[in-house]
Length: 206
Length: 206
DNA sequence: GTCTATAAGGAGATAGAC
DNA sequence: GTCTATCTCCTTATAGAC
Picture 1 (cartoon, chains in turn red, purple, brown, yellow):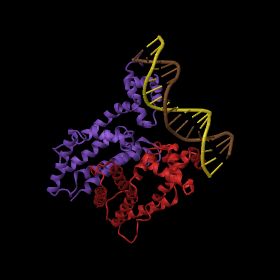
Picture 2 (picture 1 turned 90 degrees about the vertical axis):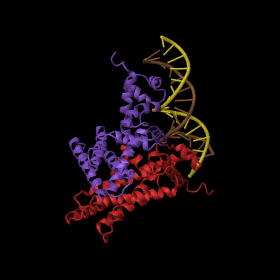
Picture 3 (picture 1 turned 45 degrees about the vertical axis):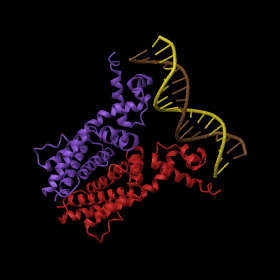
Picture 4 (picture 1 turned 180 degrees about the horizontal axis):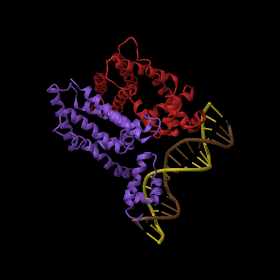
């Protein structure tokens, strides 16, 4: 009886795991059903289409990034510390689940339709804009004050995100360590994080 | 008669275009055949399997990266100029065809089997190792001489590649410019290239 | 070499019984 | 709400005629 409670949630749960591990195309509704322990028609009863199931799984994963800039941009700190906070913040999110970055890159960046939907849903709302606007004025203020070199806020953010995302794309490939020892992996991630902070902070010096 | 000459090459040609534009999974052998103007069985006559066709298309694309470090590392220049050359070199390759980066990331980094095959074929041969070894001793010499800060060669290379690859993943999304104006795009790429040089060169200063 | 025909299987989605 | 059965479509690959 317990297995049969909340089948809808269990489908979401299983779908999340399989999508993360094998991607959208690599996961069939039949396999999801088999893993849940129900039949394939039930997936469609609850979610109508596989694509809608995908977004029901995907939206919560993505929404944690939407207000991405508000949390780490603590105004009581100086700008360099805020930048380091931003790097720590994103590293923290992505480190929680190493399957997340390849999943996002693959399903979002590599799929035009999904990208458009994502942009319309999440990159055009007010909370994101205002957070970025705050960040942008911070950058401009630092440049005016002569504390960092001239750089556009969007480029600075792009540099930061590029460096972080690449770490989590390459890390699962065992590029860092021949073996998959989790201590070595943690060391590698920490090392990369500090190196990225150093590069960014050094790189925007006047 | 001319259309029928070198069908094998024309299959390779069409397959390359379709794989680049729609990915491996998004391209069927039926569609390749239809575009070539032959029947689908002929694809298998020449290439046996779709996977083998993929590698026949993919190998030449990838091989230009294998000796990637030898060309730009001109020993007559100082180290900073060599670094800038490396950045220009990769930018140049990727700029030649903007479909190339998403293709490589998607098919190679995101597919475990392909990655393993790629690593065994291309990352374990001598030419690659010796080029990297040269780069590594250059970096160590610069550090010893106190001309740059301490950094591992592999991390420096990873930083450079991360920044460049990200540009070409994001660029096709129109992140840079609302419209797809090719002059704006060129401006954006040039701007990013110079910004990356500045970031890297600044970021490894002592 | 090039073709037609087809095998053999997997996919997502739906109809309708219970 | 959950099931079985099935529809429709598309895929890669092969057999065999010409």
